[in-house]
Length: 389
Image (tube, rainbow, N blue to C red):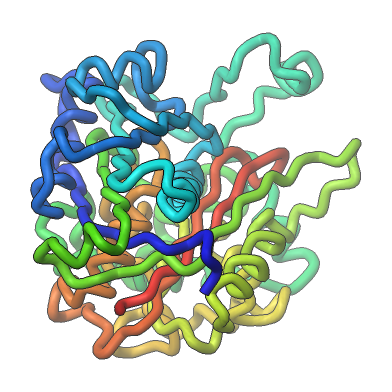
């Protein structure tokens, strides 16, 4: 294990609300912060490092640190990689802890897209000063049509089918039925997915993630602190983040930045994809999962459709358990940024605290992978690997 990754996951918390019209975003950040610290057996007074992303209201960490009443922090960081940010934060917190800069790092995410009417069918406003804005805004790119473009290209190049993509939603629905907080708990069949309305060819409504309010938080600590707490020891052993863009128009729609982050994270952890039996895979759309599974090395490029078919992602049934909380497709996608929940469920699995119907037995390693932005244009990715000690 790299010396840069000597840190443990001490606390996790996922907000139970999926619709929170009477909560401010700051209040949601506070709720999840207190929840994760309570899970760890710590308090705000123990925190000496804070990490957040663009979902934090006001002047980012400046506003939330003051709102939470955090004092004399030694490390404050706001890395923005969209939905991949929070996996990157865990790795950066682990590196800061290993360097002796802090001992207890808090990472929070929260938002209210459901209450505010935000969805993947509307253009995201990243500001008129973005270098791509004047060229792309006239064509009104949205998350939905951007990801649909990737799905269409994958089908064209590799023969991937809508039925194969549907199996990803089916797997998430099988898991969500056991999650009392999941937004969608009804088990679906492949035909149910295919019968849902087509929203951006070739994607159907059931190929798309839910839109929810809420949030989540994690606490990363020095191993000495972790040993004094009551939760099972879960160690951070590898993390890598990167960004993939248009490259002047030379863009390959069938690969994500995960193709670059995964090999580095696996090398840091000293393992290979064969050692992973549980994975939290960012599932903004079904095609997002399929492409990441290929780029993570669980199967070769172009073989993702066959890899996911026939229930192969269902816990206790398939070759690789994925998103046993129901994922963004069925459970929760707070603030339109699903990376935090991916970390939380991976830690639950390593602790042995997932629902008994979906718990992977005797789990040693778990992987979480996040995507932020548009697969069809530019996005960030982060791969995080953790180990039960």
